[in-house]
Image (cartoon, rainbow, N blue to C red; front, side):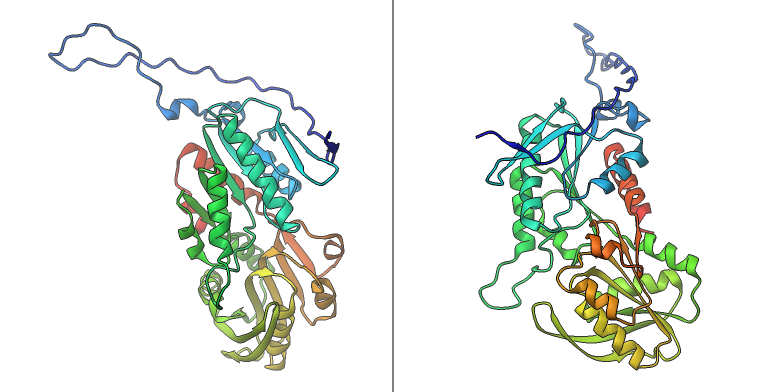
Length: 367
């Protein structure tokens, strides 16, 4: 069986001139010890890294098919070409992946959110990691702007799986050495990994947007008790008060808003959440806030899953604007909706990737 073309091979980019590696100086003998020969010492890891990523042949970024526009933005931000790959499908849907360049000893980053279709994108990511491992990549960092299956992070009912732990195990078994994640559904998911994890927040991007809007009488609203810490951080950055909506979930993707905790009368409210999925929670929260006297309601979220009837609900809702990031590409009908505003996290991811490669701190990205 021969693979059928599923997506075009990325166009090759012109090679860049690499900087010459400096030869390490011979190691100095210990005083008083005999010196039979002065063999050159092995270069330190820092000598593998150029001051410019475009000149560093040991730095490579590869992209899956889930969110190529974001990967292209990240590569443009860093000034590096995207790694050359060949991704195809057999007639039965089986994925075939091939690296088209040498990665031996390289510091490799693989960008792939596990958004819909979740299973396809997850398997594709595992296949890419396995190919890199078998090609002797020096280090493999998975960059997952959206971590699918994160909402099942505990046993809240009898006889259920903890899928967020399962996915962490699968990624490590495939060969990932490090993970770079954005706005996990629960921060403690980092503890499910036995490899280093860098957890970024999209809040600096979202806060900057609302600061520029300069909206009057702002109040940040958490749509449930679980998001209070996230909303409190957001409110502190904007120097505005916080309110909470008491939410009771009766079934999967089904919620019932109970009441609003905090005074929102005459206020412009910003609902903050990590994920907007079917938008049922969001639209009910909007109604609860407006019924309690709020003037206008905006919403923002890191991950615009927007599945099922989400677009129809948002269209019919009294929400002023929904601000999301591009961790997940919008489906066509959502992209056409004027009340959805998309902000880019390419700069945030690019700076984090550069810091990881150069082995410098990423803590400045949290402010």
